Length: 408
Ligand code: AMP
Ligand code: MG
Image (cartoon, rainbow, N blue to C red; front, side):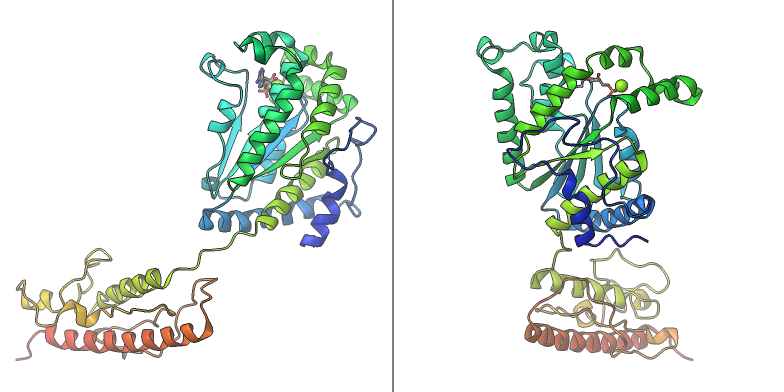
């Protein structure tokens, strides 16, 4: 397993970053065939470790529900966007990820301002959203093919003057707004060479299972290579900002590109540093109450023996099952402690009817990570919880005796 600690990640991705304000020339400044930082071909191990990091941080991101992460993927055709998404996100819980592929805008989308559809597709808090192509098409394909701009139904003021300088400013402003509101942005340009694109196109033609990936239009677009290169240079030079910098990933080697992309995304998540939420004292007290309810429902504890019982949260009157009356001798609240302070959950209270003695001192389950209150508060809460557990165990024993079938 590659050591992909924060230091190694930082070293690995440093050469990809476009410093804000830097004037970028392609391919002079970023070699598509380079593989910096890969020591003796450990890309696979880096990717595996990156995927593991992503999965771990994504779970925390979802639990914390405060920040989101938007991954913007741009590349020319056959640059490796689809493969990167497939491999890099392979270990992440699908519930925590959205992928949006942007195609030629629909009539409905053209009826709105050009950023509308991208705003609509932003990830929610707790989610990693991937833009497979993105709002940058609005300053790439739209710039390379002026006819597209003409079809965008823009008012005259938006069509004249320096459209591209204005759009760069608007995109930077919009991204700043998004970042300031908790959605971090990672922008990746998969930088493939012209020759590697040619080889991949031929491969898509030669391998029947890859034919579907190829469109005759791809070769037509390739003829605009220089226009795209210039458009990308402008994008990288004008929209790499402190709040949303670009990373140019060398993409001629697919394995390296995937590992590098995983490292940049992992770095962003590490910087967000999401944590599992700490329950408030009230929430913790509610947890303890619910737990005691569940303990009281243990078979033989006087709740609903062996029946699965009431749904958690509802409190069965102790003794009801045996007496057959709606009235209960022992009240549920006797078996259900209502702690008023936070503290570790009490240990399991064994049902006396099940043959094992109540054990209020049994090992408590591990407290949820991050339940860090002050030490004093924790001690007090722990004592209270233990007392509550003992009380619950006692009540459970009493209830079990009360509900036992009468001996003849
Ligand atoms: P693909 O990614 O191969 O499925 O192709 C999607 C196509 O949609 C590409 O040719 C893009 O250039 C095109 N496209 C994406 N966004 C826009 C846009 N905003 N305006 C015009 N064409 C776009
Ligand atoms: Mg295509």
